[in-house]
Length: 168
Image (cartoon, rainbow, N blue to C red; front, side, top):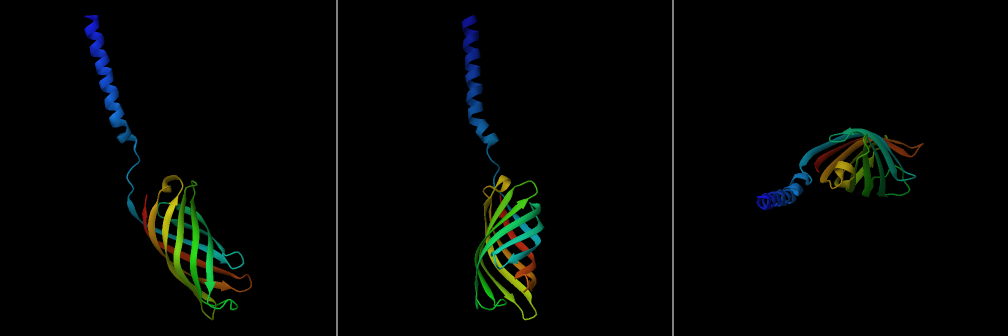
């Protein structure tokens, strides 16, 4: 009787282990990425000397954030500070209050300063990952900005709106 009980117990234990080995990876696998609408609005400035910008804003899935960016800009007339400019590329990092980062790249854009120093810009971009919950994020965006050029500081102060989709 002891032998039968031992075999039954061993078989039951092996069966439980086999089921756990098959089911456990499914239970702990990462959730499926979901496409979501994305929108942010921020206030910031672009510095001509460093070709960088800093923004503070609020966005869906981020809450309050700080955004740092570096830009590659080609002005139509390099000697004219209010010359229209093509935005060739940029790398933007939005950092949420909890430290998670969302990474963007502007793939094209254009900025124009009017004679009264009012500035407008628009373009498109892509989301290319991040950290934390945005580690493998992807998406596409459109951005638009309005502001003014401060010729004394050689900075553009603006309000930026980004809309698009975010998959994570």
